[in-house]
Length: 347
Image (tube, rainbow, N blue to C red):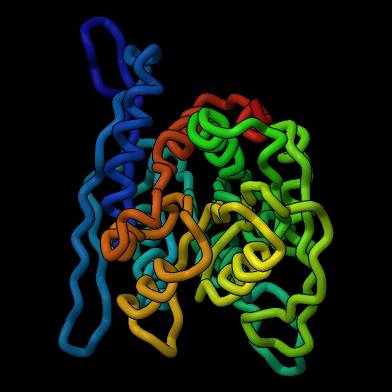
């Protein structure tokens, strides 16, 4: 939609979100508005209004305000109840489509079912593949942004291939601005949590100018916790920076931290982009207490998943790096047709 402003006409951009992503979406809308400031004569960014109704038969209906000929940005991230959130996302996208927008962008700070993407056992569901197919073929989604998917091949389930941005730069900035202020790089070591982390973050030790170590693991079954086999690298008398893409139950990182401390590490800081922090066997409060009383000196995560209510239980052990500035910049580049490659570079 074109909105008259003096002698110019501006394209309206509306940002929508599912219920549990709304807090993050408001921050992203603010960041996007600021980043498009130099294009203020071309674009106007606003939050879109969403009305979610649940009827007596438990059916859901979503209504959006006017988006005819607008650019629409829809944000959705994983939050419990996860499956209800997916239904709400589909209803929201259907409502948007029915209102005839000019273009729709979908951003997943953390894509639900992203770890259920392989048929690695007989007769199991693979919703990590089916969800992109539904978004593409049924709801007509063509522009998708993923923040650090668990496996990079996930973006290839979308047609055309989804865009991906890492949270790595946030980690690097924090390490340089905090740990390196009080410790020389040679006193630190980057520890890869497993083979996946080693592949994903292979450039980090070189960018930071520090040594690296590696925790060898294997999975003998389909449980969430692998078995630790060995530790390679010198960690004694050093500050260990343990990196991985996400923390689920935390059981694995607690074992890793214990191993590192037993090997003589001075401290262990855990860096992860996605803080799921969920264990179906215990309550959130019990889980956060277990993590805060562990050998991990500090957890540094982002808010791709709603996490403020959890980390507030032990604020001295958890630090949350805001993801909204990175998302705002990435979405701005997508709207303007600019490259996202720069966001992959470690400065």
